[in-house]
Each structure stands twice: as structure tokens, then as C-alpha cells.
Image (tube, rainbow, N blue to C red; front, side, top):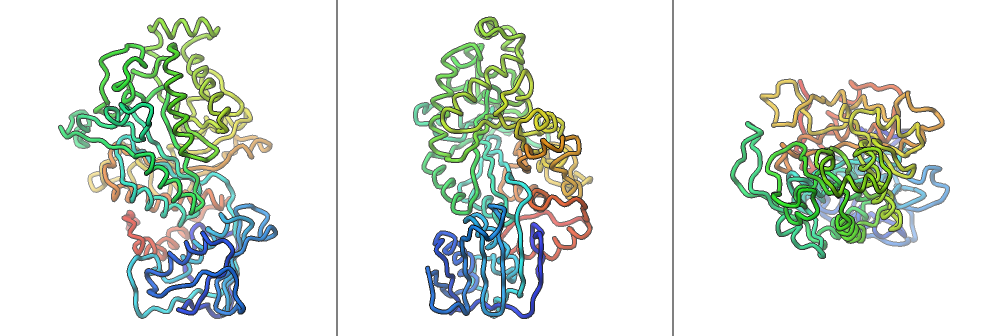
Length: 511
């Protein structure tokens, strides 16, 4: 039997196999999931597979059914395969989607291709699987601010995520180096902020390549991506950076900065001193208008505001910021940032959204309803969880997929630095032992991050993310107490044909 990723909670193998043929029917009241399964199967099989709401005979059927008692976990599922039938049961459509991915992994790897494959018997081994995730946030992040990727690739990125039962796509849409989402009220964001004069070359990192670069996603394209993800039970969490990482905005609307002039979309990497002015009311008018448009595009519960790497040097000498500190009775610029974040959070809460920010939002005081994404190691997440805040663990020590994968960097694509081989990723502990037992429920889960300073192409995104993202997916699904990396690697070797059929440009395992 083919290995399954993430490894299921329980597997019982039976006798025989179920064979899909031209007479097989998909029986379900969940038409979206049924047609999604048919869409996976038809290209390689080459024959139509009917999706019906009911049938007179259960023989030669794949049944997808919602049942409240199918699993105690709302994202859980059961898969039962006999020689006559396949049945996937789940409390929600999301569980059915995960059962479908398991079914696809049990089939010959060619099923994941887009072209007709002749001469294959499409057999699924008899098996009973009972499965459910350990965490409810199982995510991947993609930075499109430094380098942008097509809508078609974003859809492929989502396809790869759902294949490994991830459920949260964190879309990092704005940066100093580029603003990537259409905002109708502020057209200069796509006329000016979306484009930079040049990009640093990897070999030098301080010298530009002299080539203009840019682009953005229209609101129609965003709708398209969000709908595509929703069909696959993936929630898209947008990130609009503030108060820092905002030079691209200031280039178009300089009045929103402390200095008020002289900005251009950044053409180098790193951390810019120029940020939104915390003392000007027009900054909050602008942000609330922008966030309102973005909220209308993303129906999910969470909204990421970044709030990381925000230097205070402009605020320290800005009369407006200093007046704000005085008027609000704040101690310093760190409390000013906390005040800024809480003001935005109050606005988001009024719109029915929950704020997520990088662990810098802990500095200067934190609202109890904010969710912390811990990236500078795990300590920020530990502190936040113990204080009663929800946390998503994404420590750079385990989850930063822009780090080098091999020690011989001359034979690896350019990376931002660091060293994070697959084996280390698989050791990711989502709930550190320092989290108090009665606070462990505040750890929502974890995610891998793909920052793209040195990742200009979609092929390189795939190479940097896979198979390390598979390790993260397995850890946040099963959260094993014992980690057998050698067994994980052996299973991956057997699974790679599925990735090849999907066209994933994964990094081969080291010899």
C-alpha cells in the first residue's frame, strides 16, 4: 500500500481492492466535493465518472457522506474501502476533502497527472482509516511582496497544500518592495506602490539589476483565488503590513509618513526606517478604508496585520507621534506601537475579524483577543499562550522555508541564509514543554513560511517548500510524540512519484 501523508491516526488493511472503472459512480449530496473528486480522476483515467445524489445499488460506488457521528473531530473522517465500495464519512465537508486526498494517495501515482494514462488498473487497496488533525491551524505562507506569482501558480500552491491536508493559506500581500492588491479607493497603490525600479541581485545583495519589477492582483483575481481555496476547504488569511514594511505605500501617499516626502518603493531588502506615522489621523482613515476593501474580499475569521520589524527612529523625532504619546498617556514608542495595533484591532473586531500579528505585537502590551504568530523562535508563542492569547507557531528555527536546505550552499539556489534541512523541520515541536498544560489549547497550530527575497520563480518556491512543507503538514496533523525521521524519509521516497505526477519541483533527498 502507498504511504499516506500526513500519516493517519489508524489504518487497518483488508483483503482485495476496489477498482475504479467507467461504470463507477460518485454518490453524494455534497456536489462540490463530488465534482472535485471527479475532476481529480477523469484526466488520467480518460473516462467520465458520474456524480449522483443517490443510486439504486451501492456496488461500484464511491460514497461521500456527511454524518454528525462520523468523527468526534469536526475535521476528522473515516475511509472504508472494500472490493465493492468506497465510503468516506465526515461531520463536515472539510473532512470529506481530506478523505478524498487520502484516496488519491492510495491510487497509482499517475492519477495526479493531467494527461490520459492508458493501461493502468486504477485499484485502491481494501483498508479502513480513521483520521483527524491534532491542530486546527495547519498553514503555509507565501510572500508575494518581494516577488509576485501568477494566479495559476497561487492555485497550484493551494492544490499542493490541500493534498497534504493543510487548511490555511497565509497570503503576504504588501511589503516595502511592492503592494500587490488592488484597492479601488486608492488607485496610486497599484499605479505606484506595486512597482519598483529594480531588484537586488542575489550575488551581491546590495546592487540592483536595473530592471523594473512589479504587478498586483485585481480584486476579481483575489475573488477567484479565495473561491478556489474555499472549494478545497482552505481559508485564505490576508496580510496587510503595518505600521512597518510600508515604504511602498509612502511612495504613493507620502503624507502618511512622518517625514512626508522623498519616498520611493524600496529596491533593496532589509528593514526600512520609514513607517506609517502613528500621530496623524489621516493614517488611520487610510488604513480603515483599505482594510474595509480587503475584508470584503476575504470572508475568513482572521486578518493578519504583520506589525513586525517596525523601527521607532522616525517616531522618536516626529512631533505628531510625540504628541500622540503624550495625549494617550503612553510611556514610550513601544507602547505607541501597541496603541497603534490595538486601535486597528478594535476596528477589525467591529468588522467581525480577529487580529493576527507577528510576535512583535507582544512588545508594549497586548490585547487578550489578539493572536500571536511566533516567528523569532518559539519563546514569543510560549509567553503569549501562557498569558492566555491564542498562538500560531511558526518559528524560524523549524518553519522558515527560505533557509538553505543543504550545507553545500554553492550547489543550492540562493537563499536568505540559515540552514534548515528536512530532518530539522520534522523535529518541529508545536507545543513546547514550557507552555503550561492548562494553556496548551491556546496553541492553534503551526505553519511554514516562504519569504521570497531570493525566490523569484514559482519553480524555486516549490523547490524551497517541498518536501519540507510535507514534514510540517505531518507534524501539525499528527503531532507525534516520537519522531522516526528515517521512517518518514523512507515513506517520502515511495511517495515522490505522486509529487512528480503533480509537477512539483521538489528538492530530492540528500544521498
